[in-house]
Image 1 (tube, rainbow, N blue to C red):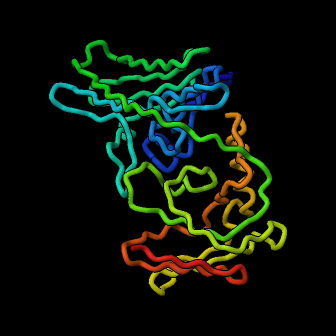
Image 2: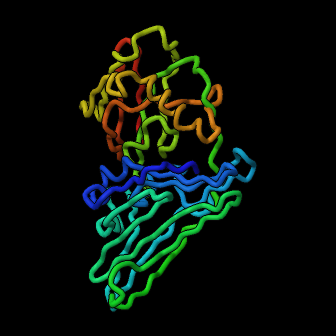
Image 3: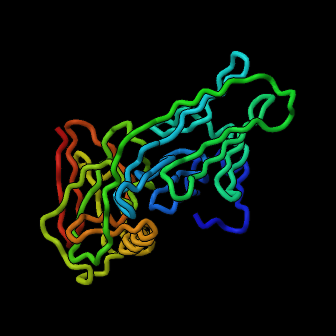
Length: 296
């Protein structure tokens, strides 16, 4: 990784605020096309987040091998969960509340402050190897109470599908439906990153991007005949095509692009609407037509 010369640090005011913390991410690389990446509180919000993503066929062919470490600090008989995970409608555990600071110096450090003790965690990749080193150090007063650190690795073999960024030829109207799952996803994951776990209902009449001013594409979302959400496409970075540009710039450092024929989600301009069994949805895009579906 090419590290910045200036130390970057975030204090507890940022680290304990998940909205702020999850908008800040770090990335370590190993020179082989592999990397480690997450948010500054260790809450994985993207499909490529993980402590070790190896490039098995450099520079692409990446596989997530180590998703994260679940850490529990035991002080006397009290147990403190240091990790942070997001599930459908819940954050558990809430280790970010103990995170006193997070910094890049030159690789990521995370300092946790607990009753009578501070512990610091560092993460770095060995250059030229698919190896991640995670180190824990006790900080502060040497007379701190005795403690035990329990570490549980979450190991998976999950291939990251290679995408490519090519000029797209047609646009079609589409509606994302977020099912109730336990997959770690949130609204920001559905913005042009191909990572959200959703079903996509597509219309049958594509139109070319220059046929209309896409900023003014609007939608009325009906659930069981009642309007639940409305929106205008300009809410996506002032123009929905900029969501695709954002995606191109994010993928380029990893040597990835979007292939011709792939479906690209330009970004949502309405809030998610939950779907229950038996619900009927109708999305009205005005002059661009409409789509409907029913959940059974």
